[in-house]
Length: 332
Image (cartoon, rainbow, N blue to C red; front, side, top):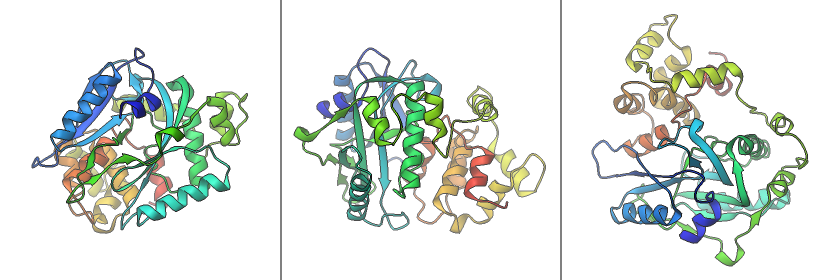
């Protein structure tokens, strides 16, 4: 485990690492974070959670505060994707996800990643040979996300371009299944590769000499607008909305409400996952977060407390804007 995280995590001394855990045995499970300064402590913390039979995740970046908000992210040392597998997902089995990723790599002559079985899905990591500051990493990750989506590799869209996201740890257990499924690195350690940032950019058909702005402009989902940045900063401030107020105004069609939220609530039994995830991102940032995320999810097909906690926590620091709702669900 230490060798793996030494490959994909930034160098010690650049900030603190974040390990997140969720106890599936709790009646109302919630995610909690631990911040440590060394990779040895990362591994030690993961092992402690593993012994307690908990879900365990690690952020792939380092932070300048004990907070996983994007504004505290300082450095990255890898790019990564998550291919979800399940009855309601694009890939029904892990075998389908494996085939899709291999076809993607072959078709585009893309760099070979480190493959990881996440228990119920597939992860892939492209380790870099040096640390990259977060502001330089983000536009390239955004271009990578767009490259995958344009070429119909069905990645989890919440993960790839957000360095604050957490990824399930290999060498632990995925407790969504009974009995739990083991998680492990598929690629033999002797075949783990590291790449320069220029090599990775060239795999995206991006000239290594292009400016960051030019790289970002190649992504369909470009940088946030200034308005969106201000919105996110406001949502990340000490002020929090009451979700009950948002819900009431939305359902009544008031000016302070949201037609998209009303649509999600009215159609909650048949809601597609991307819209559920967007709704969760709003509930996650409200005063009544612990009850709100379950209130809007309990009628969602396949609802579980664990899945809801995981999905909601993944949106921390990034409530979805009206524009993102509208792109997913037009005409509302």
